[in-house]
Length: 272
Image 1 (cartoon, rainbow, N blue to C red):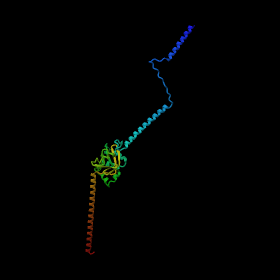
Image 2 (image 1 turned 45 degrees about the horizontal axis):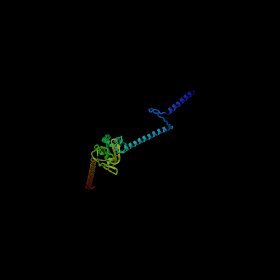
Image 3 (image 1 turned 45 degrees about the vertical axis):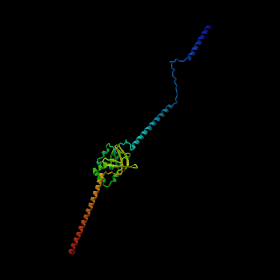
Image 4 (image 1 turned 120 degrees about the vertical axis):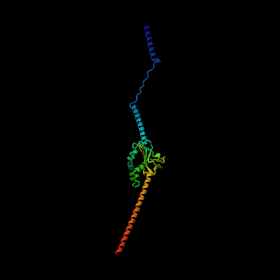
């Protein structure tokens, strides 16, 4: 019996020792411990709030970028010195829409030059407004409209090949016109004058050039000389007519005097 008890006790001790060794033993070197999963609890609503904040910030940034782009584009369209003006209408259409160049457009039609200013160009047009044509001496406009050659010369005298805005005019003294004559350009305190005509409104952009509104109709030297010759001839004719009328009046007076004297002598002879 004692030997059996001892046997049981030894077995129990061995089992306990084995259990202790199994709990404290280290794993083999080639065995990697499994990673520990860490779960973090995020309060409800925080993730959605962060996403919404990021979305709003991105939208505002895009809106600001688009606004800046639009502002730059508008600035380029307004500034007359920009090469890309953004104007869609040609010179004739721009002048027609302005409503202050009615006489000029009529003259262009009469001279057959309307289509020329609708071409690609570019052209710089010093455009007299309606008031400038009204300021011409009486009969001058009618005479021009009746003389296509002179009218064409006058209109071409207002057009310069190439595009010259007000800034570029500051660096120039003369411009050669389509008519062939030169225009004298002066800039004083920012005011541009061309052959004495003042530029009222500068840098009116068109798709095929630029318009500068002026307050005076420009007459090329050849037309001015013809106008002066015509005036001189008119004066000479008037003087001749006056002299003729005076001579006729004097002759009639002398004739009446002679008739009166003859009648008087006849009366005396007859004793009446």
